[in-house]
Amino acid sequence: MWRSIRARLTLWYALSSTAAVAVLFVVGYGLLEDRLRRSLDVINATQFEEIKVALGPDYRTVGLQVVQEFLRETTAQSSFDQFLQVQTADGRVVFASANLHGRTIPMGRDEPVFEIDAGQAGPLRVGVFSLEPYRIAMASSLTPLQEEMANYVRIASALGVAMLFVSGAIGFFFSEMMLRPVRAIGATAQRISSSNLSERVAVSSVKDELSDLARVLNDMFDRLEASFEQIRVFAAEASHELKTPLSLVRLHAETLLGDAALPAAAKEAVVVQLEELGRLNQIIDELLLLSRADARAMTLTLEAQDPSAFVQAFVQDAQVLAEHHGHRFEASHTGHGPVAFEAKWMRQVLLNLLMNALHASAPDGRILLQSQADAAGWRIAVENDGPRLSEAERQHIFERFRRVKQPRGDYQGTGLGLAICRSIVALHGGRIRAVPAEACNGLRVEIDIPPRG
Image (cartoon, rainbow, N blue to C red; front, side, top):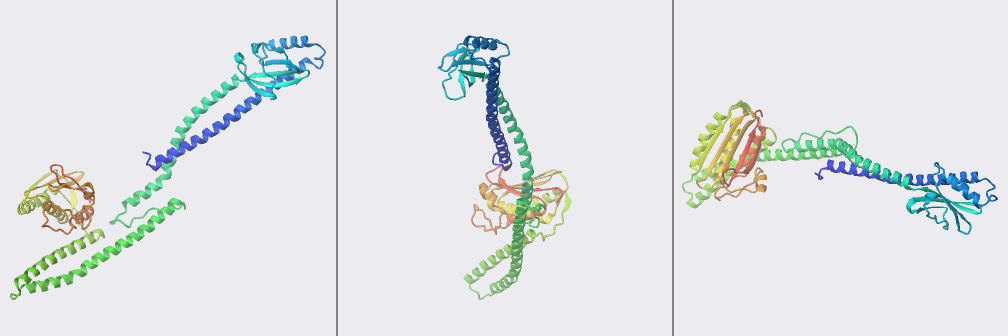
């Protein structure tokens, strides 16, 4: 799954967005906590000023006992929620609010503001103030602050999880939009082949990296089309030009063979030459056919017809040919339905497949032809019990001049028969493939022809 660019873009966007929000939450945590602590310092300072004003300017003359009584009454009020401790300059504690539960706040440190754990009173934020001849410690509980910060963490965590899912959905949507032009380019490039080099990638009017990529690919396809065209023209012209001198050579060889004074050894050599000339002529004819097929220069007359009569006629010829080579031939056809094909070229395809199967099978081997026609099209399969081919061999079997080692080494094909089959099937709008045989340890070639070419 993660090999998909869309999945990786979605994941990166979700993680980066969530990480950015997490960083903001962490920074917000620190800022909020600092603000709340400062607010406690303000509360402590405000409470001290209220006590200072309430004592009045003559607090020194009224005596310590009066000050203690005043502080006791003040801290006993229901509205007083601070912690208070008073000590003299020599460090003697002269008053502590009841909510400290006997715990003493250490005031000997230099910091005017600090935090302590006051046991039963809980964690406190302490501010130390001077009111000669006393030092007064005003403290606020940190428990509400800690509870608020815990709530902040829970809310931030929930929002972080929600952000992960929301950013994942948004990232998926945006990655889908961003990769749509890339998929369009890939689909167009996949459709372009040696038989369809004229199609080009659509270039957006927006000048960006994708439009630059489309232009680069189109330039490459232009060069490929020009190269393929040169190769096709060369193959067609070269094949055509070779026909005349080969015909002359064959004519002279046949004339020489008719000479009664020619020695037997020389005649045998001439016969071999004539056989090789025939094979060379066959290769040239097949190359010409492939060149015309690849260049779409062949005009097929696709006629909608029921293939059952065609198969029946071919089976009669195939049985005779198979018996001549010492093989058993079995055929079956099921279904009916109009299929657009040209009988001449489909017969050529089946003959090529049959000849390959005959030479690939062992002596007295079985060749199986299966045909089925219905509304979905025409499916043909030719199966032999020859050697099983590997997947790599099956992938390259339809390439030009690709030969497979035969059980009998006396047959030397041109290596173009299956390439011609592929070209003719492609002109019918169909496809051809090689798979392992189902009923035996051999090869099965399957053809699919659509109802309309």
